[in-house]
Length: 292
Ligand SMILES: [Fe+2]
Image (cartoon, rainbow, N blue to C red):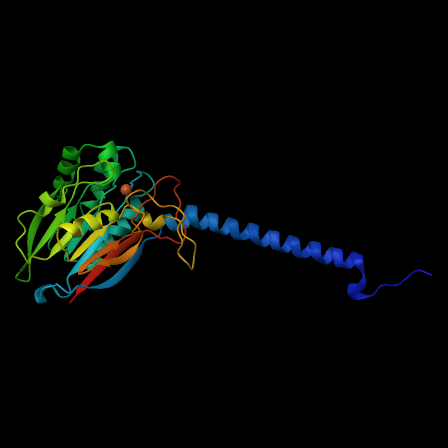
């Protein structure tokens, strides 16, 4: 007489159950991977995030309490792909009404001709005390400093290469100081800060964040702003781990850091290099409010 097996005691049924679970898991993993790919390639690179952060600075003069510094970086502008994103950037900057806006380099990937059409959009950026820019390593590798400076200045943007500019805000002088790019460039922090009166607060702009240690060894700064790392460009959601680290951006990847009284903020930037992909790492416009 044939043996009748019931429920989980039936080996055929157990096999089908395991196979079904495996299929379900593989299907789920494939759907998750596809969802991540769509998000990383088609959604995130086009979405602008605004990060509003209060940064406490012990040496901030009373008149500068509440100073709003806007920070944008690493456009790596690609004509035909990035116009809409840059228009969102300009709209966000104009709405935030920052005192000073810093652009910390890498406007191109490897074609200096993209600077002109990019500036057709960025010339509408606005900040009460001025918009300032510095060179990034890609700009230095592919472009020419003098040409880039001329293009930016024609668009009403101050361009700082190992120099500073003194701006008066509510009766107090602030030094906005920018170095040349660091990775194969000619940064000169001593020359950049030379002549800034003692006790004048300094907003330092350096493309590569790891140069922070060199800057503060020369003189404390109220705040250094940097880009270059893209925040890793692709990160593990939840824990924020980024497997990709670039030279001169290995120590300071994203966000706020400090060394004694000096503060550093590193932005994720706006654009992408390599694969046009961002994951758990949205393009960013950072608005930093300085408080005593
Ligand atoms: Fe860079």
